[in-house]
Length: 152
Image (cartoon, rainbow, N blue to C red; front, side, top):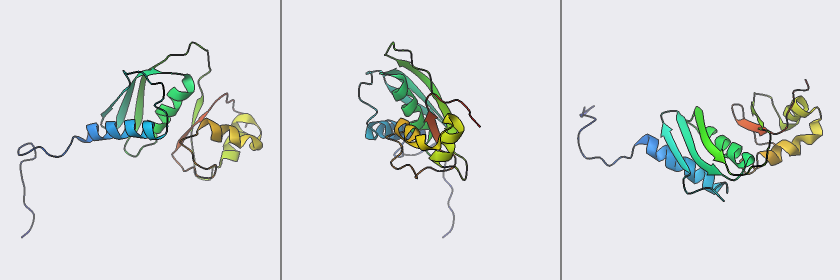
């Protein structure tokens, strides 16, 4: 038989748009991680190619950062355009985002940013529920490090 060619923009539309599927998957991931509590009714995810735009009201800065990481650490997403608004008026410093490199561990990362390798639970807790175990990080993954200052 062989290879048959068809007009891609013609025919019955039964396959959903990749961007729509990706946006729904990101919203589902936010929900599965329990980050959807107290999100405003205007919370939306729009995917355009490799970019996920996240809109709406979130309860606090930590939730905002975790949603950004949940979306950005998904295969196929290369950028997150954050247009979320934080409901809380409390002034909380934005966390530093760190991209895990080959050979990194939470202890090495925390030593670099806090100066004390034994504070690895601080980074683990700051990235829960995305992280399930302190040893389960991978190169390319982005982590949030609240109150970080480079010590090394």
